[in-house]
Image (cartoon, rainbow, N blue to C red; front, side, top):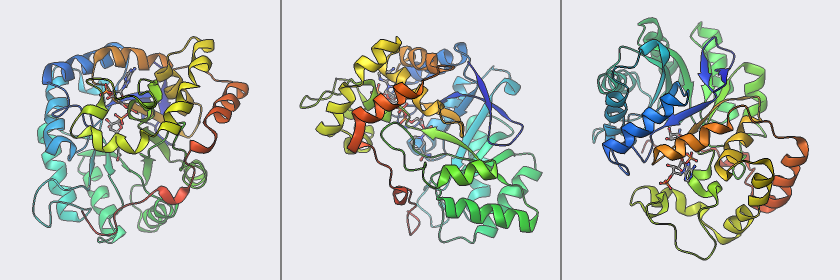
Length: 332
Ligand SMILES: NC(=O)c1ccc[n+]([C@@H]2O[C@H](COP(=O)([O-])OP(=O)(O)OC[C@H]3O[C@@H](n4cnc5c(N)ncnc54)[C@H](OP(=O)(O)O)[C@@H]3O)[C@@H](O)[C@H]2O)c1
């Protein structure tokens, strides 16, 4: 496993991290979840990503139990706040009250005194940015959070937050967590250039397109049994990528991966890691074998000719529109 700096910070993260959205506390049983975490640790993954909202807070509990007994200093634990964790009007968003309370819940569930990175899971139009950033800074001063980041913020929102932090002398954002894959490149036009200039690293999610880029979903065929597309919660999220024109072109990537001696999942993860602004690619897994497959993408170099072949194959199905980075106008 190779390691990278998280943005311009001093923190090192494994360039492949393990995330537990859809899986822990939901699609997979606790035993399988534990085996995936064990496989991740055995393969050299040190960075783990979760969120308060995953599986209605259960995902953090499962991860907390799975990491019990592992030396805390050998791990980087990331979680997030924004989406609802309860029914009340203050159980959501980025207010001082919800951020503070949600972090306390996350620390309890993860069985740790601090998280390495605390991320605003979307932009909250209903809270002044100064309030959010001051609260994050307070949690850093209290030692409960070591670094702060955001997820799916636009370049304009990230830039504004950095300006306020500088003016108010607050801790700066070190990371953004966007969706990024061969199929979804919306950060390249605006978020990446701003982030490179400002020392913000991308911790990218769904690098394998939720499984689509493994090539296991075939055009015109029902999804394979036990895959995310057949899961009641996961199915909704992946369905927008399961279009025949996308799946047909993905099949055409098979010879490119084969010539390089890579699995399709490895090619997908290696592809996002070619971008130097990416600090880490967060992979999900429903089985330990998937983790073992995916980690072999660490350290793989893809030359310009391979990158061009991939672009030629995927052509019009690649999404590049920066306006696709959106947060809800009203709190959910
Ligand atoms: N910040 C955000 O808003 C946000 C949003 C989404 C995700 N995330 C983070 O990013 C993490 C990863 O997201 P993701 O799970 O969508 O990423 P992904 O790595 O693109 O997809 C993971 C899924 O693909 C399938 N898969 C993975 N490796 C495979 C392999 N080698 N062979 C066959 N199938 C394979 C598995 O699903 P099946 O076996 O069930 O098919 C697995 O659960 C999440 O856990 C979370 O931490 C963040």
